[in-house]
Image (cartoon, rainbow, N blue to C red; front, top):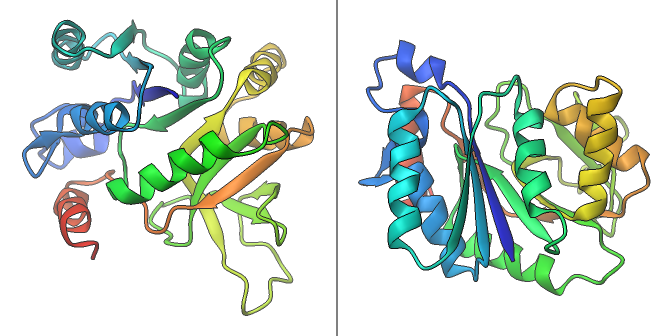
Amino acid sequence: MNFGIIAAGEGSRLVQEGVAFPKPLVPLNGEPMIGRLIRIFQENGAERICVIVNEHMSEVRQFVERLQRELPVHIELVVKTTPSSMHSFYEIGRLLKGHGRFIVTTVDTIFREPDFAGYVRAYESASAETEGMMAVTSFVDDEKPLYVETDKEMNITAFLDAPADGRSDDESEFVSGGIYGLGDKAVEVLDGCLANGTSRMRNYQRALVESGLALKAYDMGKIIDVDHAGDIEKAERFITTNS
């Protein structure tokens, strides 16, 4: 499996709240977030890891360059400031295209390692007809969550800004977990999005559905984001105690 990390954001809210580290280097129980992801990817059979950081993140660039020298896995680094996470995804996607299925995650997406390993195995073993597998969660932790509508077989039918109407009481309500399992066809859809002026990652995901790609949702349990200083302690507690 190939992996990618989007780590090109500014992390401005953390800076404003007094966090001294660039967002990708914020330590969780002593391990920088971006280093934690790279380690987890290695432990899940990574053949290649592509990372994008912005041009102002010299400390993050240096950290990744050191890992390039020290680790046996092939790490490709893109240093580029982009206008959105969708544009960052494009830079990662064009490197991963042609190498089979891949999984891309944002650097501040925090999950438990066994849950992620289960997701990787599910995507690796999915049928050839499955053209993407998105990690979803029923734990709403985002300030502007993207709701994921599925059928009973967990096929994704829509990405919505608000919960879908008509959901029965026994159906789970999922939101995007910020972890994207895709392939070459999805990169081609993204090329079209950039050509027609589409912006925002959520609109790209809608375009994937509109293009007819067969996307599955995978319930990864609890997933949280580190957007504010207070989220750091919450993330540390979650990955050690699952609370």
